[in-house]
Length: 548
Image (cartoon, rainbow, N blue to C red; front, side, top):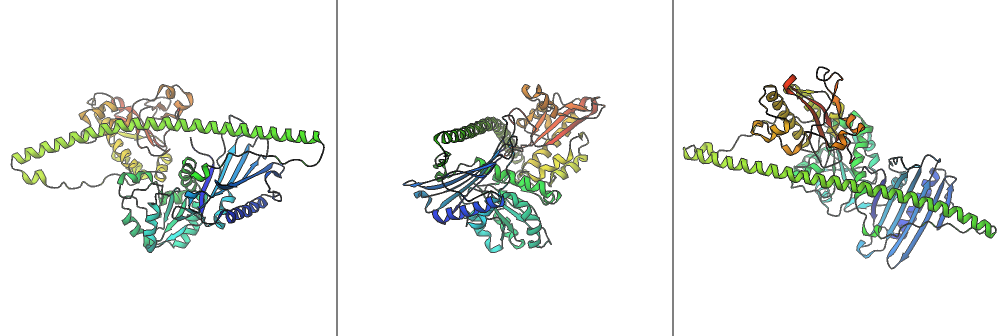
């Protein structure tokens, strides 16, 4: 379940009173910009516009202090309700004088069968960041990306490895021969606009790139690309690089609007999934309190109270429905995580067995060479073979002509789009899968394959082009195959000589990668015995199934 709301959580070294004053001033500015009436912001409920109400509550005592403002806007009966919440919290001993600031924006649809609208970065978040010295761990959280010079690289590495870091760090680089200031102003700042409050933002100066990449040899970024470094970075562990997606310069320049949306997706998801600091978790649940009507008779007061309480009850029901949907979504994610864990366990066992088999074979061959006196051949280092893997999915598509027994019938734009979200091994896994499919198609045409692609991967016939059987699925689940919409997504193009309709149900697929919601898949159709071809109808993000 993709999060649709916006959440900013930052801290500041300013005290509670000063932070509350700044928060209220910026809230008033925000309300003025909306043409709302901010004159009454006392405790309780205030109508700031005919379609908008603002609730304010606060508390202070032995367990610290908090102030909370919550605004609900319902423009029309069918537009749903936008709920914006601002919380200032301080006073807990473990926070060591820090004051926490939290901003939440979420949409509540008017009807149960509707999906919430995605929340963009609100102006109140930008106003707060521009007026507070906001921090996340050791880093400053700002709306403008800071330039990192060579002398700043060591400090940046410390920030990236900070165990208390909650926010991702997004680092942009400057292409060769481009003016850094112009590139930052015209390209980077518009791309980063949707990241305000969701990430720490930097631009690597040209003279800092070499030093930075030398320090993070497994997590580099260069050439006008952008990389998102999520919390928990381990610079010494190569597999960790898969968690930190890279966006290429080509993607940045091809569609700035799309690139901005892609960049914001991961930080927005992390902000929704990351547990709140203990101080904010301890803030009591919101209880809207209507202000007493000091004018009129008792019957007028009762009618007013009834109308207000009915409104509050409706708000509570809608909030409960949203929480239920959120819980159901988390249960779905848990099921997916458990399924992925089981698949990874099987894949790891298979790869371990193959590794052990290879080690035993190497030991045997070395012993044989040693016996016949070929000591140099037995122990000489092996020359590294030339790197033949493409450097991008766009290049992968261009090089499919090297695989004569494959035919790509899918959407090239979808496949090229993986370049903006790819982690390190997706490209090599996809290329290895294509090489194996091409060799399988050749064997199938020669009637030496002896079964389908999965059987071939499990046999010794795969030879020099092995592919892990755990990454191969020859069929979808019955629930997917029998679901009209899900099946239609897998009806992918083939030549009319293969099927008169021009489409075939491609349920067979390769699991190219995991690690985020993209989880790319390669769907294919075996036609080796007839045409000597394997048709690849799709290479892109995971198609929908019953869990998505």
